[in-house]
Length: 552
Image (cartoon, rainbow, N blue to C red; front, side, top):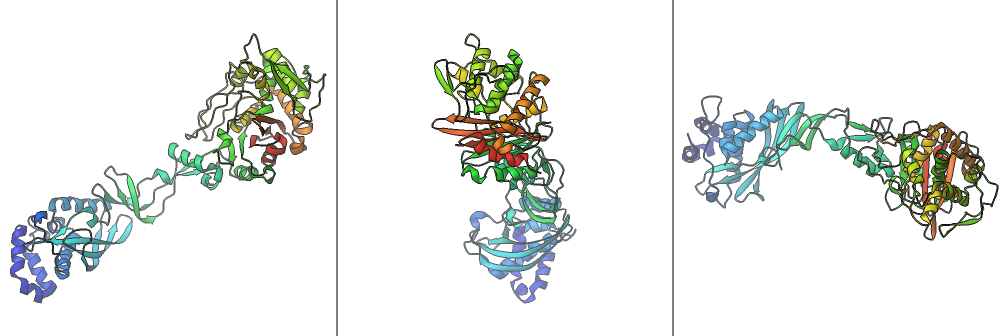
């Protein structure tokens, strides 16, 4: 029996319907129901959109049809329910997907109420109702609505779209219940303790977002509930949670305790709100333990590419030991100034001239002229000034590092083909030499570990190797010299008295200003800090480094 016949029967029974109420509805419903399971024998004809009346059906008629539709749906007579719509075939498929996707056990409806003309569907009466669905994992209760339209001939139908199933459900979307779809954005990026969320640290918020986007989470479990999924089954929105899942995690090398210390250190009152950046490493394995920064120029801890000043004397000394065979006791006269390649160089204030100074003594007081004189004399040959670059690459691992998780870092730069005054300036970390706190922390770590371990922020991340390990001889020389800097040299005002600490300060000229640097290590970590505008390394970066070295 088709829809036209059904509507005709309903028209002849108007008086019966009015006086008989729901009982009369059941008589008509029985006449139009199939023998098997109470469903329609055939799907009804849809209301022609061109013939939809501009006048919506009365509230009573709209509620009556909605009840018929919901009754069939609740009894899982899906063809019968679909025949009450203006798109029977589409509705039947969607209703079946609803049943299957939710693993529906039981469906009931209540509070069926007409609320007047629909503001969305022209010529329709809106009817609201409450849905109680027992689905996989629990009971889901929500409010929904249909729009009931009628033709100019009085034929009524539920206007079909997916929002009948759930308000706002798209035509290419469906519902699922049980295990909620995986959502990569819920992964927690955590410290090495496996618990502390890195997003709680201001300096790591961008890094956390990048790692979450690029790294693969592990562990975790999905919760149960109801969700909207797209055509491919990917989660769109969670509608109901029956049981909470456990978010997967991405574990990093960050030490939560040390990170907290670093966050405070870069904001030390002595810095006068100058931009600062610091990195701490586990020198034994290259694991990044802390990254902290302030200022408006982004993460200067891993991307603040600046002239490193006298911290570069660590690499200059290593080149003199490895490539020339000098020792800490080799002569390195300290003069007030000198000229190299027509460029004049001078020392920082407070550095006394000493014609009998050794490399170790010049390193301790940070005499610029000593390192320019020895560097220019021994490491520049016939205009070739690539020796410092070679030492940085071959021994200290300078190159393009990938610390993991898609986190971008800026590569240090010691050009192999510097010319003019830059051939001398490079030996004291000026000219075209540029580095980041990340790189300078690695330099200190290489000295303390007696070998290079490329910094990483994800355990198990690939670590580049240096072409040549630092010799035990050179590492021993540098450790002794850096120890002297910490105990009696330029770093002593901040680091003196700390056990097992080696350090090197740096003050780099930048235009009319200076930047302060300090790199150091103790028995567990290597750290470097940069303070933009710092008047000296010890009186700026020193206030950042000390709390990290003394953290319990």
